[in-house]
Figure (cartoon, rainbow, N blue to C red):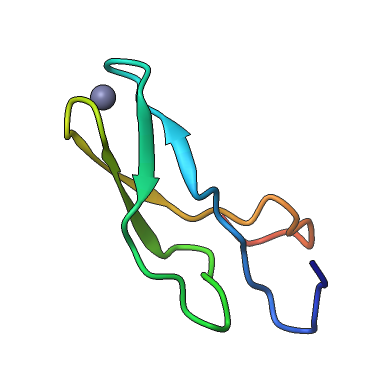
Length: 67
Ligand SMILES: [Zn+2]
């Protein structure tokens, strides 16, 4: 892991399904340059097959985005 000059975000490869507690695997291909804040990534639960779309957030960006 190294941080370059471009703000990119590494997302979790798996998340826990909020419905059944199973493993949700990342089904969105991660670009070589990584995800950018605001990108949408999709996960598919292997147990209940629910799909979860999450927005990538930049937790380590602390330079005050205008809101
Ligand atoms: Zn599930």
